[in-house]
Length: 268
Image (tube, rainbow, N blue to C red):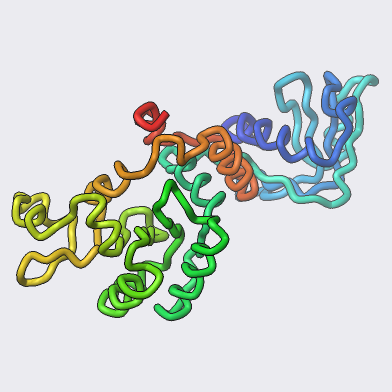
């Protein structure tokens, strides 16, 4: 079975998968066989195996236990996985992991569909428990973007009562769209005069009515106006990265490239 393309990925994932279930002595053994597992190989002719032999940092053999044992030395350590599932570690070449990790640490709706009333109740709860505060901005992540079709209701809900003076930023689960209330727009300088000053290319990043009055909707780089209002210490990059690692590893993603890492220095 040709596993040349798969071996580095398998080896990467084995380390994180085994760490929670095995002793340090077993993991540090120079030669070990992981067996009694359902190992996904990505080989169509033999998609699963039950054992794998690891020597040093290389995978030597994959197959059934008896076949794998034949290629092992007498010093090999056997590690019983008790029927667990093992898969290759995946690599994501473009994921905003650190920003996502930060969102996981804050108030987050995780893309759950909600009515405007339900959303308002959740935001009020977060306002009271302070979980969603970034400076004095109240920020909610993971908002299902279907809610943007109800901007009139959103404006009514978050520009009255307890939210008149409270800057509110609702961030879409797509990571590309969001909405802010009047208190937040005032702080960020998103006014009718500002909208009128924009070029045709810049206008596409903001929502506004026929009179160029902004309605709070923003997309892509238009969100920078609000982002720049957030205090520099609002994000703990170490905790965010660790949370992102925990989340990604849970889905078998063991390596990734965050395109925004080069820009984090402006907020530290």
